[in-house]
Image (cartoon, rainbow over all chains, first blue to last red; front, side, top):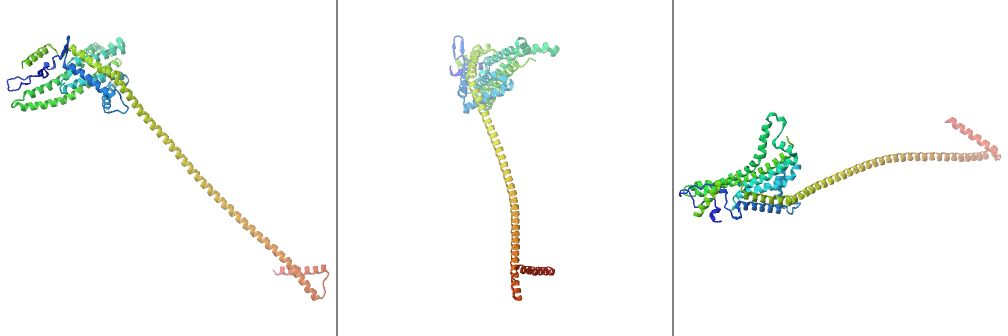
Length: 269
Length: 186
């Protein structure tokens, strides 16, 4: 890979030098393949996704492989993270009895999503993997398969459809409308919004950081330096803001996943 | 520069054909694979590990609390027992003191009665003694007086009053007169 392909824009381009602002866009989220095997293109986001796996497994291996009754530092941090998802999300939403089964899934989801988001502000990585729709879509698909199959397993064929469509005789004449809306809302729109919510947040966040970063550099000429400084301050502010958003989006993703499973387990209305 | 332009053109061309909302299949595969590895490690090995330890820890803490509770209960029962024993001991001491007092009082009374009785006995014995002595003295006096009187009378009369019976009668009469006179005089 040559030096310029690692940058999101032309490094020699500045204001007042006859060069237009190299605004970030969709191309910011495209990477040339690092290598290709057959038809399979291996890109930097894929590498980051696999690195996230390594980081998470390594951390939890260090924390939980040989856990002690009196925890060490790493184990304590791991337990805090584990407890946050287990008690703070799963037990709260699904309940302790029914939820226990889904704790590993939710813990994995939370830390995987968080780490993919976190790459956004880690030097050299600097790309939120979840800003590529394929990654959130894959995870949303897993959650979708889990809660739909769970609904059918729990309520049987008819009961499951009643659960999904919100079938309730007491609704009277509104019921057909409700059934149609609920059907689309739950079965079609829900997985889409689940994935897109995460994707769009990380996409927009990354775009903002890249925008201010490019602007800082682009404005580095004459009076533009004053504006460039403001832009650079914005880079730092946005980076801190992203740090917060990354955790929040991971939390929301798992919170929604838990609430879908809770809905699947709930008695049909 | 030229390479950069070509690269940018390539990316721009790609961007036009690529809808950001359509998942790229290769990325989807890698994403699912990466997640599967994380889930596999956590669900099959690491989380069960920590769950076991968390359970053990909870048991250890609960066991500790139970032990502390048991110790507290025991301490309380021992204290209760000790207090009961103390109260009993106090009660016993009070009872003993009371008894001793009663016994002491009874003893004093008894001794006093005994003393009284002995005193009276001694007094009575004294009286008896005195009476006996007096009687004896009176007896001996009577005999002596009789003898003296007889002797005196004999000398005066000049003859021995040999007839004892008569002599005795005379003396008795004389003494009776004497006593009679004494009784009249009193």
